[in-house]
Amino acid sequence: MNTKRLDLNLLATLEALLEEQNVTRAAERLHLSQPAVSAQLNRLRDMFNDPLLIPAQRGMTPTTMALELLTPLRLALDQVRDTVTTHQHFDPLSANLSVTLACTDYLQTVIGLSLIQTLRQQAPNIRIAIRNLEPSRLETQMVRGEVDLALMTPDEAPPLLRTRHLYDEHYVLVGRKDHPQLTGDMTLEDYTLLEHAVVSLSGGGFFTPVDQALQALGHSRNVVLSVPSFLFIPELVAQSHLVALVPWRLVEKRTDLKIVKAPIVATGFPVGMVWHERNHGHSAHRWIREQIGNVLAD
Image (cartoon, rainbow, N blue to C red; front, side, top):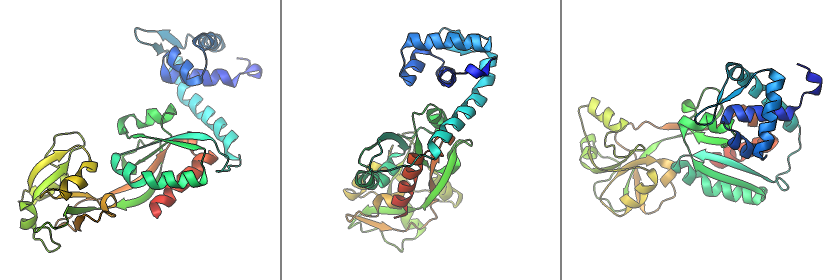
């Protein structure tokens, strides 16, 4: 192969084609027309003397050579991107870009308003898109540039992504302000007799790790309601006889709730940032990570 006339744009097209395995989607991602991407694919086939992508019933199937090329190609292009962006001066006041942040609804509530206010003041032309976290798809989303940064438990992140610990969250027991049985000196028996609401992220579950711990101690609690999100809980317990275990930062500023320490050890969880190597050296992304770190530290 004659590398003297190598076109890096062709390699970027090859990366998009191998990741999307569809000419139309690759064209949309590259902001090119479909005929232009098809023409570039023909040039790539000549360059590598291989079909690279073979038409299939749905999209295209990469050849063995194409699969072997994907990882080193991705690493090489990421290095080029980092080289171009690492030494660029970043001015928040004049920066104009969009950043996509993925996190759970709990973290959207905890960080959302503070982060938006910080960015509006310091970088008014940066746009933040917040989307729901999909852990099973996160690495693919970051490779494709669909997600730039995620807030989640770092231990649950795909191993090839970068992580940074932010803080450790803990659970508290909450109920309405005048709940007569909700006190700081409850016994374990008092706790189990309360009417509990629990969060089942998958939906419909009534048995959680807390119930598993209680079972090991020979106890069970009175779970009467299961909801799919922590965001339902504060309003539910504020207007009922229910109690619930929730992350402390979700309710720390609520004045209409009674907040006490549960009479059992409720496992907490760490919260951190997760990002792809391609964004690691980018000056704007570095700045945004620092702002998120500062907001959560405060």
